[in-house]
Length: 186
Image (cartoon, rainbow, N blue to C red; front, top):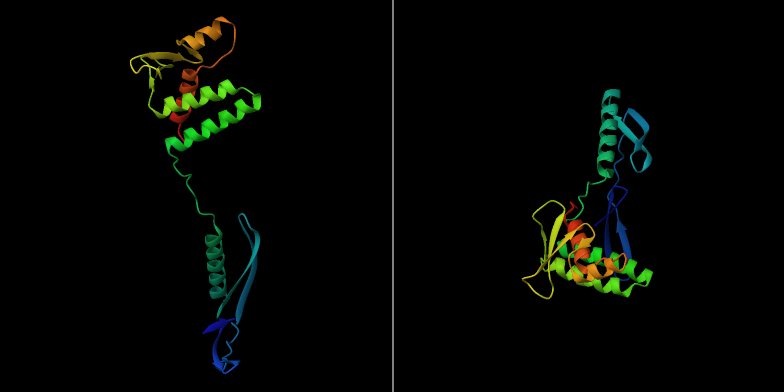
């Protein structure tokens, strides 16, 4: 059974022909009152609605109902951003950092970023004993921790580059930066 423009059609197969049988159509009397109106739908622009009824009041009420139903049906459904896992957010940070490092041609930075992500993922970054201080566990010894404050670190790699006057982020500084970004609300 199919319906076209409110008319039900029944199809029957007879040998190789399709015969469409339609019931006698009853014509609907036109409503004595009709109200037509253009209105705005946010995100879609102008729309047109018609309200019909036996009285002008009924036609106006039907028009208001049609407008309200149209706006409700076309209203955007508020979508809350999905809560992403720490691993997914860390992967995004790492990808962004690697992209920048490779664009600069800095392979060493790329390697340190991967090591930093590994430190963050393993839980090696912890808040320190004062504000602004983070401690990062050594990847070589679980008993040794480095102090990171801002972009300075107590590790030998950072100290060597700082003494040479080079701006350098060791893996511990990078891990603390990643950890801080992950601590921000999503």
